[in-house]
Amino acid sequence: MGKGKIILAYSGGLDTSVCIPLLKEHYGYDEVVTVVVHVGQRDEEIEAAKKKGEQLADRHYTIDAREKFVSCHIAPAIKANGSYEGYPMGTSLARPLIAEEVVNVAKKEGASAVAHGCTGKGNDQLRFDFIFRSHDLDVVAPIREMNLTREWEIEYAENHNIPVSVAKDKPWSIDENCWSRSIEGGKLEDPSFHPPEDIYVWTVSPAKAPGSPETIRIEFSGGFPVSLDGKRMTGYSLISELNHRAGRHGVGRNDLIEDRILGLKARECYEHPAATVILTAHRDLEQLVLSRQELAFKRMVDDKWSELAYMGLVYEPLYEALNAFIDRTQERVNGTVDMVLYKGSVRILGRASPDALYSSTLVSFDGTAIDQCDAIGVSNYYGIQARMLQKNKKRKK
Ligand code: ARG
Image (cartoon, rainbow, N blue to C red; front, side, top):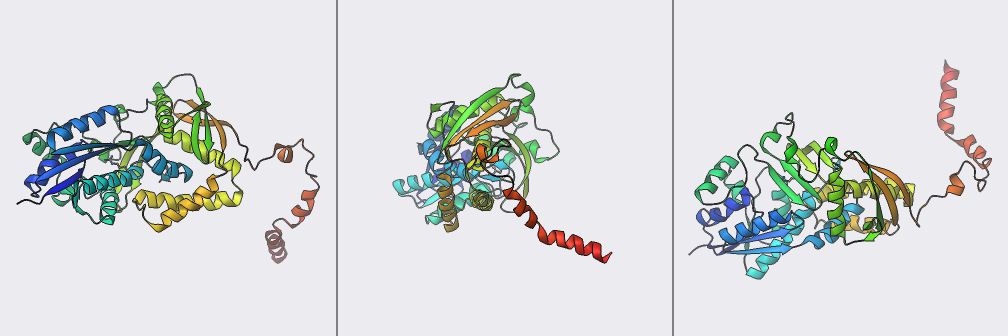
């Protein structure tokens, strides 16, 4: 009598594929149910994962969570300018949703155990485990628990008729959702190694990007992008189209050393064209409509939000409280931002908002709405303590 049923968060990749026979042979489960959650991976990926899941597992689910991903996880990230160590975070935004969808399948299937294919070195194990354990499920993580290496996995897969799509000379570990694509592992683990051009698939090399610039206009409502070049779109289609358009201009690549949750430094390569463009526009618009005090305070809130999101701690009460603060500020983040895409860069051309805290009549050198003489009195007081100190220093010389 085996251990019954287990639900596996499945991607179609090597790690999660070898988990299927391992959960039976090594762990003694009778039935393995695979779940692929569609958060914007390329169609071929989803199709391939579905085919593999159906072939290798006892039952397979493909869950389309694309719009939910955008409205429940990307939208808060845009509003919070969500970025970690200088790049727009992506993987961490999708993990809680993927985990929750797996939990839903576990409930439906009456299973009390779930599995994932994370190693014991990365962040994703912690993000998944946190959600699974919050729902009182037993967690099995074969790659971590059995201390498996990729070489061992490739051989095991070959012996178990599991199609291996990783070529031995290009063994990248890739994670993809509509907000970002990350590439790590293999030769990239040498931080001095120059990545080959073909690790990138969403973006062209800036050197090969078109020689003529392209302008775009994004409209925001409540801090969220609602139209592109005047055309209203759902969040998901706007992001997809921007990935395509900005990717064509080589916008949104990153190659950096990142501090993981456990403390390990890792070399990561990313491409996130839409995220780069949207966050650039969003920050710019906030600068126009939020007060100086709000902006300064929100920068701290955004940092804390990003840290919690990176750690996957979306049930942390502080995360909810920060979202409430951020949502309140975003009520006034309405308007349009014009930008130009050119050879790997995105640059602001102009912005406009009905909620702008900006007045050209006040600031203009030509305007008379403010009597310039009013500033003289302020200037008399300005920096008075520091000025006194300078006087004292001179006196003592
Ligand atoms: N370092 C990023 C993060 O922790 C991305 C990791 C993605 N995983 C991968 N196998 N490429 O969010």
